[in-house]
Structures are given as C-alpha cells and as structure tokens.
Image (cartoon, rainbow, N blue to C red; front, side, top):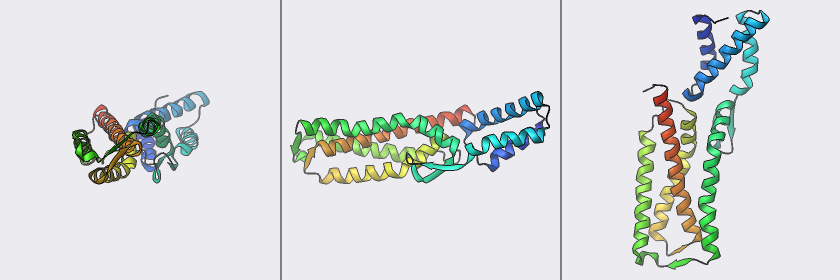
Length: 215
C-alpha cells in the first residue's frame, strides 16, 4: 500500500522536528520509514496513524541528540549521524595517531637531532610547507558551505578549531625552534595529515551536496 503525498509530508515533518537535516542520510531514512509504514499497513491491516506511531517508536532512539569523544562532547547530533560519522572517521583517526607516533618513535630511537635547523635550507622548506598548509586550511574553512548539513560537514565542524589552532601553534613554534627532533617532526607530520584529512572530508561534503543537487 503506497502512502499518499500528504502522509509522506507528515513523515518529512517528523524528520524536520527531529532535526534530521543531514542530506546524505535524510533521504535514506525517509525511504526506510515510508517502507516500514507501507509494509505494516499492508501486512497487519492497520491505519497509517498506527503504523506511523510504531515506526516512530522504532526510530526515536536513533534520533536522540548525543555526542562522542571522537568529536568532542560540545558537538552534538542525532545518534544515527554520530554513528555514521564515527564509521567514516575512525580510519582517519588511526592514521592521524600513526602520523605522529611513527616518526616520533623512529627518530627518537635513532636519536635524531638537528641543532640550529635555521642554518639548513630544508628547514626553510618545512616552514614553507607549514605556511602553505595553513593557507590551504583557511581556504577550505571559509569556502565551505556551512548552511547545508552533511555527516562530513559535522566532522569538519568538530575538527576546525583544533586543526586551525594546531597549525597556528606549529607555525609559531617552527619560527623559534632551536632543534629538530622526533617530537617536533612528529607534530609536523600529524598536523600535515590533519589538514589532508580535513581536505578529504571537505571533498566528501562537497560531493554530497552535488549528489543531492543542492547549491
């Protein structure tokens, strides 16, 4: 039994109330709920009102506002959004940790140190890389469409302040550093990877907007 246009609008209004505005999951959820209602009305011969009430009981826990240590307790979203965000982010999180600890452990193990790195041309290259990374991040930060919600946009929002602050601190630090070692090289690698990861989700956010033809 197919739902009427008015009944579908009632389901959409329900998603609006629950703040399911994330375009990469909204249509999928809408289809699931509609299918649930239609199946229940067909198989159990119940009214739309009763089938919809049952479906809401099923989905309400998924729409509860929650947070995660992955993204900071200050950033909340419906549970289903947090679950998808964690699923797509965890690999980047592991690689972020690896980008710091791998060079740190290797260089520390071999007692790597460069005194007065300002005397070497490579150091100036590193500073240039940091500056370009900072400029790239600022461009992505301000060119991003924050008005349209996606799961990837939620990840970007939760990581923006930390990444921006870290890059500023790194830029200042590398203008005053007197020694290169495993610690600060690890810091450099981790913040470079953080910016790459930010670009990855920035691209995914843009692709989601384009896919659902929202400008």
